Image (cartoon, rainbow over the protein chains, first blue to last red):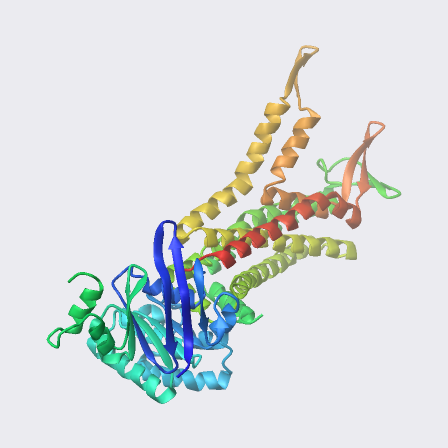
Length: 246
Length: 323
């Protein structure tokens, strides 16, 4: 396995606040990697630095072999992002929104057309593809966001709180989609969440964040072992131990 | 530049599909058509009531016509003055309405993060959005200008000489630059201010400062530094402005894009000037080159202002953190 993302001492400071504090980890090719932590732990800031939207105060990361500071464009060339609270052009319908993003990613027109239809079908929006996004519910927008992140057929998919606002059925569909993308396409997937169930069900490895630092890193059994969790303890208790709550 | 034309195309289509754009465009078109119609009638009546005596390249007023109506060129500038004012007022509002939420609206909707996650430089976004707005503004200017001139020519029967066409083309070009300045002001405010409502308010204040506040400040400072002299001669009171007052007022007022625009366009459209020699007024022809040279400082300021505002927008946006 080769690392497609190498995070090296990544740090972000806002005045006296250390949002991300010298974080170091690797994400291997084809892995489903979870960034778990409470609100304000530094998950989103880490992701925004990886994608080049926020410059790090210190440290760097190598994404797809490209340094995020020296070659930001190259670093995000094969990365799909679903940001937290992703918005769309509400005067356009789902297909038009995706066509715009496909054009930005320089996807050939005929390829884009076919891919957009497949993606809309995949996220369950085929029957609403002609409806303006302004009329979409939050869950539908989130589904469209997932389709958007896949429209350029990325090697790495970064999802920030992807199931936020999605109903239980949609959440289940999302999990199936992530598994399929990882298994069939070999896609590397990083996602942030504070839903422990999702982490338990999906992730190959997890980084637990606390106050901008990595409090724990490894597979679920490894994480349990690191805090000497008993068999009777569920993952919620393990997580709370990492947060220093219990 | 990757993504530039995709951004520009989308921005242009978004703008022309907006109701606010269509509403302001319609307003501009109506006021320009009405003002050029009125200007055309005024031009025709001034032409019929003015008799001129031509001496070489100078024309001497023979009576009848009002002050300054001494031939087609001078009348052209005066007759189109309402059109110039309308472009100055409504054109500025239209440009602001297009651009005041260019970036902060994307930020507020959450689409800016998505946009910037694509392999395109931030330059492409700022250039593309500006280009899309500029094309929309240019389209408005072309349609309004052609319609206005069509009405003017059909009312006056004005023969379009090469000289007139060149002056009108410069007028058109300067109008585009003027609207581009307000477009850049809106863009800058949309980058600097987080909320569209705040940037709209700030843009309207800038517009108001341009059309009203800066010229008033120029007048006020001129009055403070060079007060009007009051004197009584032969029992009659008289007021005299000092030369310094006119200079100071012109310099400060000229900082306003609206005043600078009106000064440049009036200068370009004026092809004859009144000159007093041996006590009698004489009209001197002003060719295009002379008119351009006269307005050169304002033109340089005008283009410099556009470049400075756009450069500031670019620098701030490319260094901004997108959270």
